[in-house]
Length: 472
Image (cartoon, rainbow, N blue to C red):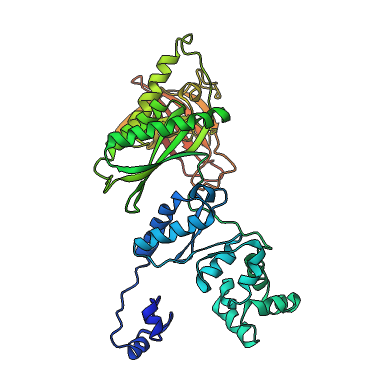
């Protein structure tokens, strides 16, 4: 067992990260040790990342105890970079966290200053001056590389800056030079946010926190009105919305609601969250209230303006989409499903069920008349999965059965139609799929069946028969 982390008091006593627990107790017998819980630590870091969304939507996790915030274009909302940094450090300090932060034009330099410097804002002119006195470990190098650099007398970043680049590349590869260039800002280092960035977003910061559902919906309606101009400028409507609630104590709640059609109407957007909040009454805890409410448009689609007064069918379509939106918001997106056609000759693969709220608009999703792609009619009742049957006296290699048993009943074939061959998609690597020869059979009792033989006789002499549907 080894120490994963130490506080300042333990560090002053000589304890260090990676030290064995027995050695640490020999140095300080009264040391207090708490078992590490990586899952809990990760959840806490993700909670802090959600809390930092109040400053910028571009928040990324950095290792086990750090966050990267891309505040480009956001600092002026807080009164500048200095005010933003001071606000973050002050608020997190009040929550009981020991925090260090730095603002610079490169993530690598900010990381180095946070870990081996102090809280400050580094301008582009002072980058090398601030970076030079730091140890080489500030470049985010692994311990073996740092130890090898120390053996050569390269202990500070300034030593690397003065060393020719070619020998460093030959000895240590490209990692050392890459990290150095990233810290200096010579090599671009993107920050990958942990959540997708909303295409449109609007928020309200409240002087007095709110708790009741009525107040939340009232503010949500006002925010939805602010999104109207942005949606109109794009000629779009929102299909997926997210309401983010920032609680006073730092807890962040995210509530998503989708729509079956692109929406702009603030009343319909508010109605979605009315149903969603009604379904989350037992899971949403307002605590001491919410101080910030934000409404994000996570997905939007082109919005078609329809003259509803002259279109006779528009009211029916609108009522259906409203019903789908409200029921899906209350009971979940998978409670209502519809089907979509797929390009496949295999009957059970020709369609798939999808969530109604995620499907295309209902008037465009289902074609009025399906094109006939087969040479024979299809049964009125098609089984979800084919059922095996026992065939007797089938003509080899391509003939239909003259008698078969299905569901404990034996049927004598009176008439049969020659086979229709259906093959699976050749581009799918499905070993279970095989060529099928379908027959239409009529029994002496008047029943009509749709059966098929699986596989080709020259490749597999065994005759495997299945029934797939019943004709009227």
